Image (cartoon, rainbow, N blue to C red; front, side):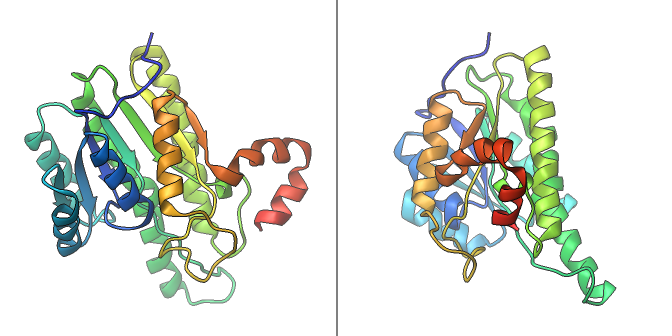
Length: 252
């Protein structure tokens, strides 16, 4: 049987999108609990600033998650740096609002390819490359951050919604595999509501703070939860079961 809870003291955790929003909050809270964080982000200067702020247990790994070559290099560098990995948190994401009935095809292609690469290809690539390095851990875990929009999409960001739905499905299938072949591996889907970050600036109301979101994620991990529904997202499964059309109207 796999372990029912996760502890972070002494853990080596890979975290994407580590310099902003939820990722930065997660990094700070993990460090405070005794973890060492392999911090992945595109901007090397921001990673160095994060290390200056939080200390030497932040290990920076700069690279562009939308590029497969960068991802391969980061995977190799992380594996060489750590003799054991305990966790992977795929937090990085991008949401581009786009229309498929109004803009030129060239504009759309640049937008949707980056959304797919960062939101879906990168988590799958990192799982493929890094999970084998968790075999030495007693409490290995994978966290994929999805969204309520994986369940009911919004009109303005169709590709983002599709990538989160795809990541949610991938996460569930990965969990099935772990339940069959590696019971100790905890595979977690985090369903997040609207959080006050750079990505959501100017969108929506009643946002929660990145610190609130990060604390909820780590609390769910400590409890060994396979799905972590954060804040208002907790009501989504219930509402969608009872009134799916209402859910779609709300999120649309």
